[in-house]
Length: 265
Image (cartoon, rainbow, N blue to C red):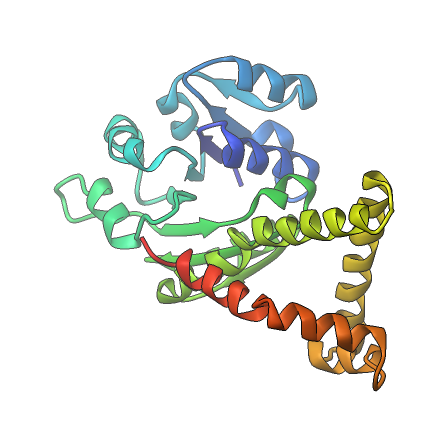
């Protein structure tokens, strides 16, 4: 499978790096287009076999799937530039652009002949560069075989789920926005550790390993978080006092309100 990525910014560059580190896509079958060269040069230094170009059409024409990783206001112009060169009978188009719907993407891709390609909305998070993304995929006009093939690619870059487009906003809030929320917890816990007398770098190390352990417990035991919480909350103990203080300060409510806010356009 040849993949063209239009845009080498945060998400486009992260996807290119993740694909290059994986084994599903050969590095010389990755094509990245960007209007300026510094980001392309950085990719070439890391992965010399990646194909880079400043011409969107050159990258798009070579690919089986074209992935848009540009700013929302650039989508229509980019598609108007490349769609004359696309063959909808053999090429798929995917968008990593937040807020763009399959219907909008289809309208931009319309050549006036009633033909549209297989179309995907793909929303990863920035951990895709380290093969640890949570990626959501919604599809239209595709086959189950093509969907499964794309899932295999993105499962190598972390974990991927095929979902209905109607669930994309909520899923994005949990995972794409959610990675920032998780990091904000890390920062808050580090600050608390410093206040308690632990050096910042040591607090970071402690919190990171604690989070890894929490995830490992949930996966190993296939348990609900509350079951694992119960294991460490002895009557009158320190943990329950801390949890109650966090709840009194609005911990759960704040998390839910943050998730709700990030689903609003």
